[in-house]
Amino acid sequence: MKRLQLSGVLVSTSRIPGDPFDTSVILWTRAQALPSSSGQLPDQSVPVCVSYKIGTSSDLSGRPVDSGEAFTSYDIDFTVKVEATGLKADTKYFYQFADCTNPSIVSPIGATRTLSNSNTPAERVNGGKPLTFAVFSCSQFQAGELIFTSPSAMVHLSAVKPSAESWPLFMTIANGWANTGQTLTCKQLIREDLGLLFGCVIFRLLPSMSNGLNPRSHKDDHEVADNAWKAGTTDSNDTAAGCSFSPSGACFTDRKFAGVRAYHEWMPIRQVDAKDQLRIWRNFQIGKLLDLTMLDTRQYNRDVTDVGYNRAIDFDAWDGYRANRNRVLNHLYNNKISNTVILSGDSHANWASDLAHDNDVVGYDPVSGRGAIGVEFAGTGVTSTTGPFDRETFEQAVNTSSIYVRDNLDLQWNEGFFRGFFTLEVSPKTLTATYYSMRNVTFRNLDGFAIATFIVHAGENHLARPVAGGKVLSGALKSQAGH
Image (cartoon, rainbow, N blue to C red; front, side, top):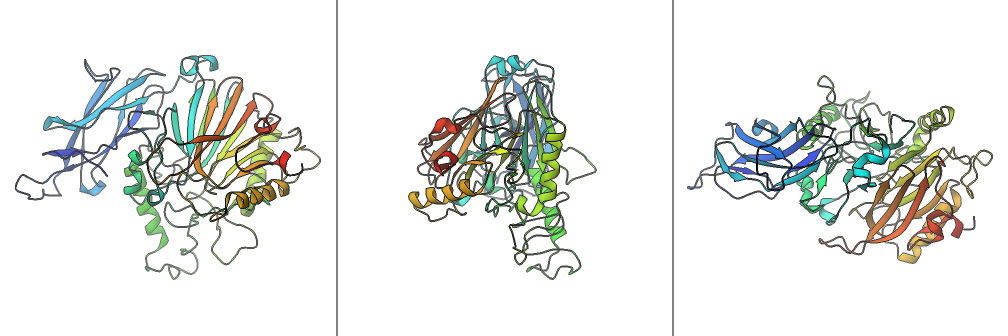
């Protein structure tokens, strides 16, 4: 983690805002006492004091809107998480941390913004301009870097309380990167001057909700360990066999709660329930435009998943949770919930689907989209490279994608050759998803290019036809696979 190399207290340059409301936002940083001029290390038992201020001017001149001080210590790895309050809705703010005892030692100025009030008409959210999200997942620190340029907000991958006037944006999420601070170096991912809403709140999207026959590989769930569920992982569990499956001899629950603790220390998210450390699911209503609910589909109460020897089907994906998936889809259908969008990730491949029951040839028409209840967009790894397309040539990857879209009724597009991300542009009448690919993610660059664009019209509940305008630069469309 890069830090300011000054005497006194250093304040990390990875200043991160997150979990905004209309009147407040969470600010996060990491601070630590520096060695003296003689090189002597400070007493780690001594708490460190960090001050913060937030205002509307880019140089933070004038009286701050909110300010305060917070102590941190070795026990929480010198992380600092505060809630800036008294803010105005739908407003951009700037903030800075400093050493309480030496105000001249400061962090760079960061930017953030608040959400629109929940009663704001959809056409007035974000000043009347479309609200843009950058959505990404599977950001392996060792695999490379990626820079985003100008989204309104970022979601490292995330169902939603429906509102008649809004887009219910369902995002299945889980704890991510909880057990390492290194991978939280947001400078590896984004420009520092962006006003982030959900930036670097490492929500890694989990199993897709599309066709149960979909051969997706969900192997990137390593917030605590691979293929985690409520009482174990692929490699260990705490059930009848006790701790015998744990190579280190440590019970999984011990490891799990250590990871959860680190997650709350290192992530700029609100503590939803002080009595329930595991709970991270929560809701955000962005005016009348968008309802956003962050879910945890893995750590809290998920039953046993793929443990390495039970692969009849992929138990770690929705293939292994068909009753759960059907309950969600039935709820959408039975209650006629419109404008539903589900975002997924973790498969290291791109997917665009109509939402419908598995192979429902009676109620769903894959050509027109009639009978669907919503759409799903799933993104590839932002840098992680392993997966079903690993080591395939471009032509081989296209052929693999053609098989996937041919064999899955509601899957309209698949692509797995490139790394990248996608954006969502949300307006009252349309939602547009644009998928971006990177030529090289091993160093910071802006060489991303759009490979596919999908439009969803309000009230239609399926991808607009022709899907992606009938043209993509990579992968395969269903219309190109004989459908």
